[in-house]
Amino acid sequence: MDKVHLALTILSIAIILGPIVGVVYAYRGNLAGLVLPPELKSLASGNYSASRFQPPIPVGQPTYDPVTKTFTFSFKFTNPLQNTISVENISANVICKDHRDFLAYVSINQPMTIAPGETVTIDASGCWTQAALDHFKTYHCGPEDDDINVAFQNLNVNLAGIQVRMDELADAGWVPLPPR
Image: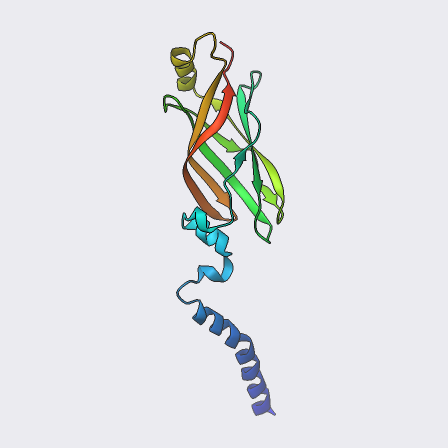
């Protein structure tokens, strides 16, 4: 009886571990491929053209709230995967498109979850730095200057545990200038 019990135990272990070992062996050169969809793998490698992911698209005009002294950018993003994804963080440096000066840091307020195929609006906000206010007084002080065209540099997105980095989003829109 003990031999039958031992044989069945070994057979059960082999039935469970055999396919697992086979799959791990098949993916031995690409273990990340076991758990990551190809789209996330190509994003992680920096190959955006090979994935179905499209960068977030600016929506409408950025806004400025003089009471809280914060500006907000809105973006549309569509989850192309068949799985729900989580966006833990989005952050970027805001620069003056004309003069390439650093103006502020922008980020999302809280993490979000995006269902498969769902399109969401992502709001990212920040506050002008003192250097930005000085820049506005120096370069954008004319009577026609009521907004500033900005770009994002070092756009970082933590998407489903994968860090995605874009060097620049060349046109993030026109942000109203704070009152002078």
